[in-house]
Structure formats: structure tokens, C-alpha cells
Amino acid sequence: MAKQLKMWRPADLPIPSTVLPAGFTLRTMRKGEEADWSFCCLGQFGVEDATAEFFHQRMDMKTILRKEVFFVCENDRPVGTATAQRRDGEPFLHYIAVHPDWRGKKLGAPLIAAVLAHHAANGRYGCYLYTDDFRLPAIKLYLSLGYKPIYWTDDADERWTKIAETLGIPKPAALTPELKPIE
Image 1 (tube, rainbow, N blue to C red):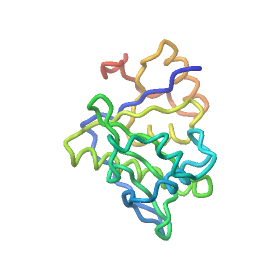
Image 2: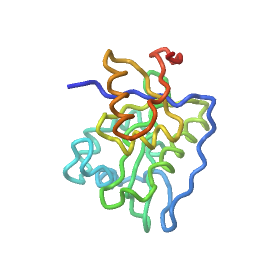
Image 3: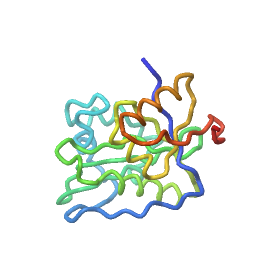
Image 4: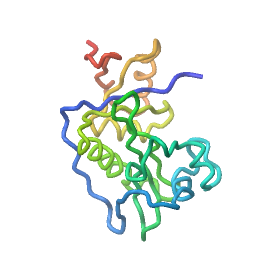
């Protein structure tokens, strides 16, 4: 199995300005909403049932705080989520997902902006993420918000060439694992 794609959003970029569609709100996770998190992730990350148990299998609440788990809600019901995590001290966008019934409603960008704003408010700038080659709509969104591919695997150039061709876009500028531009 191929390693996931790795991306970096440079620290000097401003937080993207996004607007939630009418009828949606953005907030952080409340106590007792673990099953709601799983509901948002249905069909992704191996989530088949919206249970609190699945949340606890995936999230370490010793290192992740509820205020770092963001929800986009319709009528206060979580339908999308993203987490502001730290890995090796670096800001990280993790577990971004929108329930299948709410995909395509432009909910991802506000979730990502909330994570980036949270990191910035805590003195963490720039942001990593991992994704899979087949998550083409997500990749297109990440690129539009300033994320750049990191060529951290031997096959990265080939994979990004294929992704760009599939999306019908120019191959994006990429970075080395040290975050230096690739010529």
C-alpha cells in the first residue's frame, strides 16, 4: 500500500477568508458528541457506524482537546468535522470529513480555515496534512487553500502528475521534505 500524500500550507499565507452557507454554523466539540464525530466521518477512515467507541479508537483525548475538534452544524447537528492537531510539535490538519449527505455544500473550506485560525491563535503557523490519492475533491480544495505537495516518497512526482491530469489542472509546485521548493 502506498504511503499517503503529504502536503504543507506555508506559514506566510493568511488564513483563508471563507463563508459558511446559509443555515450552517461552526463550533467546537462538546462533551458527549463523540458519536456525532463518527457520524460526520461515515464512509471515510473506515467508519461504518456512528459510535462513540469508534471516536475513542481513533482520537486520543489525552493529546486532543474538544476545543481542537471543529464541527460545522446544521440546526446544531454536526455534519462535518476537522481537527487541529500537533504532530512532532508542528500544526496538523487531521480528520477532515463531511457526512455523505452534506458533501458538495462548500463546508470543507470553513472547517479548514477554523483549524488554521486555531493554530495561528496558538502561535503555530503553517500546517501539514496527509491525504490519499483518490480523495480528488479534497486535494483540489487543499490546493485552492494554498497547500503544496511535499515529495516525501520516491513516487511522489508520478503520483502528483497523475492527480493533476485527472483534475485537469497544471501540476502544482512542490516542496522537498525540508519544505524547499522543487525546481
